Length: 298
Image 1: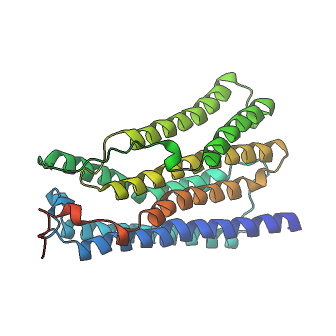
Image 2: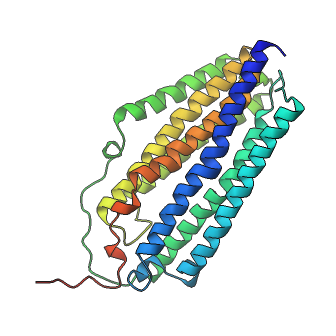
């Protein structure tokens, strides 16, 4: 096997191993610990607003958490088995590219529980808003602006890189596409994704609170992590698309699986990882979820 191919394989194995560990072991462990921390320290007897329905009771959540851990263990095992099989069978990525599809399919398996947790969280917020009783609360009257949550340089970088990718895409061989419809579809997909990011950011900054009880400080942290994650994602996808096209244009398709795996890991690090760091559950104000305001002591 040529030395260049051996080096490419070693890089791929290292990067794919990182994908298995980060997305199926490390971050699932962090998320599980976060959920258990809330269940252990903020029971429904004292914080009933955290548990708006029977589907949100601690015993139900613990049962789902057990399935979550088991699922991630199975997916991690599949990843390790695939790596071992590749080594045993002498896997070599296709010089024509396309092997990144297997990395992406595995990532989809890894991301499924994260998607389900997000859906469950949205349902919980909806139930909270539905069951919210009339009460006197202090409103946060301070206007919120984009640059309160992310440095202008990041936003400028995201816009410049999107324009740079678009120019590079239109001036290159467009991933070997000759069909104008396919070229338009790629442009529409990336542009639509960025417009969706803008819509989500606008909603978080100017829209109603997802969690009706969340205090202003905790809400600002939630907005900050969301805004930064989406801006960084926009930057990342532009770089990824340019790198992928460059690999295709200069006959470096062997690196497509590496690029795909590395990009998806960065998405998780700057998405879930950023949220976990910014919204530290140990520093959140859970008093807002009590049935009534705590009594004042003299």
